[in-house]
Image (cartoon, rainbow, N blue to C red):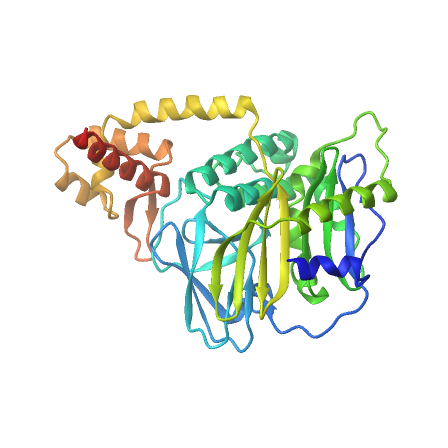
Length: 415
């Protein structure tokens, strides 16, 4: 990481004028390289047509396959969507040339959707927003990721005007647990946000940017080469959504390059002093490490001992109102789950209605009621396969619920 930061002192990297969208309280400061040298890797976004990503059938892993003649960098927080449960990569990885396949750690970002083993993924049009990405890096815990996904959704979905949804015949909002749809809907229906994103300036040889809000540096992301930034800059911009949506209603906030540079330089000095880190990936001359300091969390990736990517975001705290809402929802969820839990255990493997009626000792009316209840709770999903057969499956939330209950029973047996 320090080799990349040293480029600022050496004058190889420099900051450009800060940019501000309308009345937004956030400003974006571009980072530009004086010159571009050779690059010995590519990004997944540049070669995605040569790569297949499939669901392993486990919440925490996807399989990447392909024939690679160059190392491929996959950014942490990459959103994957498709005919299965949406995921986000847990941290950045580099796939070495000659690798036939690699299982990449991921987090679920759509708890109420079931897993389809073997189903293919495509890349979403954005990465995880800053607040969700910071929670993934800091906690590396699936439950925390679900909580932060819901928190982010509840904070930004009200930004979509009802009039816009009606005009576009979008009569319902995405669920709070469906991060990909929330991101896509926000850009689609907040046309002013879409315009803001388009207006963010791009410079020749740009390698990254810094986002500043009234609380200081909100995030920094940079690569060692302009071509890397160019490949993903549109996706990175969409991670700024939360910052861009906060407005200066009084109209007194003015960008100041000198003040912004002083703030950024102080931030970089703190980054250079970071010593403690946790290595999360190390394969064939590539490694990724996660670090935390003074309210921030970040990761950097090296290839052949050269830092190729660095991202840092402010740690996010959930507002107390959202925390309490989540607590009340969980209490109600646990109470409702107690009745009919045998249906959940029966669905550890996908089942048809006929399978369920033959395996469970309950009336069809009771079974139907329980299935509808668990679908409403996001524990069960009803879906139609390619052969036209309708099945019921446990979602990621449903799998976690019965796993947690089993562990609780085992723990009580030891008391």
